[in-house]
Length: 535
Image (cartoon, rainbow, N blue to C red):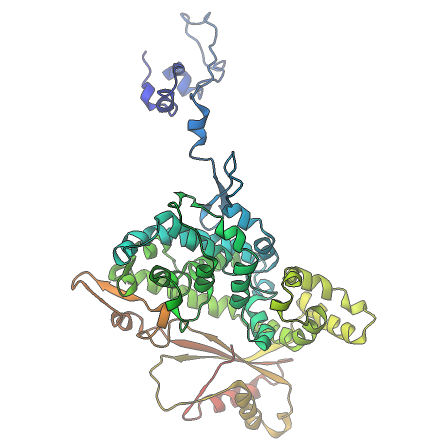
């Protein structure tokens, strides 16, 4: 009986056309049914009487010139990832060019490898046991998403900016920017910004800018290709462009960079970005939290560049709504979980004194030492302090032992959500210290010396002013009217609060919960006032 497979149907048949060596003999229907393919023994096939004495032929498929097989794989490799399945990245060619550097060189550099020891979720991992992932995995994911954005946006960007560099160059600019966007983080990430870097007028982004220029600039300038191919002759990545893109400041001056760089800014910092799309997907997965769908492919598909800037097709707005709702849910239930915030309050009490022993410097003055300041190094150091000769270190060590042992010092006594839509008028904003003072005055006299803490965690589900987002402004394309405007954003997102303050009061036990709750209600419902957050 003739085989039901033709030679053209076998995977190697097409490659065999490039070789003078004939293709292998194809198996019969019987051997195929028995699970036998070319080059495998057919001993488990039952021969008929006519073929019982014919010896089994063994074939090794020949595919011709080995270089043809290696061509698609030389210079690139895959990283397995639980969110994006596989992340492609560039590696040196089998015959490397000594003047070229690749994404592998950046990934394997000490500063990017340092991110393995910076946890993605500063305190939430003590609440969600599986949330042990790091900034390293997140940075790889952001690189992947940024590359997808770049290749999709390129055709529309090219119609707006005629002198645009090659598509591979634009892809790699966004990929490398995404890979290094979190380099400046210290231990406990954003907590470190607020409780240590602030005294120097710095954020992790400012440190990252310096690292990009001074520590990784040589590698970045020598990258010549993306996973999809080489740049055009004469094209080179400029570390200054990467440094511009990672700074998420809507008021920054975009006149210092080419127009096409400024157009790409919202992909890194904006309402929906390669950064927050990855961390919402990754953090929810790693925490085991069930959230609404985040349709990454749909969001990218309906995003384009117009002369006004980053624009979303009206059809993509529901996907953006779902994403913003999911992000808000994560903030409320993971990042600002009551126990997470309680641990942060305890950390805040001892972090300043801890850093006086560990790293009493401006990181920009001690970059070589900052390389080794991580979550791991900090926690392994303070773990030994309870037995230190110094009385001050022993006291700090006892507090750290409580934190590392998950002995939660502060208990939540009151919780309230305070939404703001951005259109309130005639309201006076009061800060945390003022709130604490008013709460104390509202307590019964015998409790006015009670030790309690006020925590006001702030989340911005959307920009306060949808029509004035600075460098991060996005627009909506309406195919019915063929118009591009930002006014349509209000129609779709006005239902979503511009700001949510998660207002909580913590005490050392629950014995005064009722009194604290009554005092809080009295303060929060007073006419003409709204709280001002410190987060």
